Amino acid sequence: MAGGKIVIFSAPSGAGKTTIVHKMLEYKEFNLAFSVSATSRAPRPGEENGKDYYFLSTEEFKRRIENNEFIEWVEVYKNQFYGTLRSEVERLFSMGKNVVFDVDVLGGLNIKKAYSDRSLSVFVKPPSIEELRNRLMKRGTETPDSLKKRLERAEFEISLADRFDVIIVNDDLQKAIDETRKVLAKFLL
Image (cartoon, helix red, strand yellow):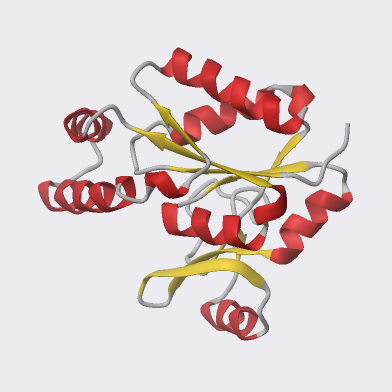
């Protein structure tokens, strides 16, 4: 079970990417380990450092940026950072694992750039913007303003889909899972 490969999943919010990633982690033959991201935001109730995120202070996050310790990072809001630590990827590689990422589209493209020789990038695409709107509304977590912002961002992200190695259209979840499993088997096994 050789490790050392990277699988990157990116998608607009609500496309089903996280559900597909969790399903791929169940297939033991893929030898996948999930890359835990770092953030400067405070932990939410129930979140654990090192499991859900690596929680860093804003100052620590900025220091690590200056020291080039991130493969990719983004400042989502003022002084609220998210990123992927090189040390996390190296830790998982040292365990003989293949590393899977569930990241935003720009982060996914940056990881692909950093590990182009041994990575597969997968874009999970909703069947349509209208279906994405329906999925986001069903969550019950969006205000009209946040829904508008998410859909505008989704249109931008979908415009970048052709920069990924594979596009999986999630119009039927089981079909998308089966298709993703075949793609990963070809790359990892």
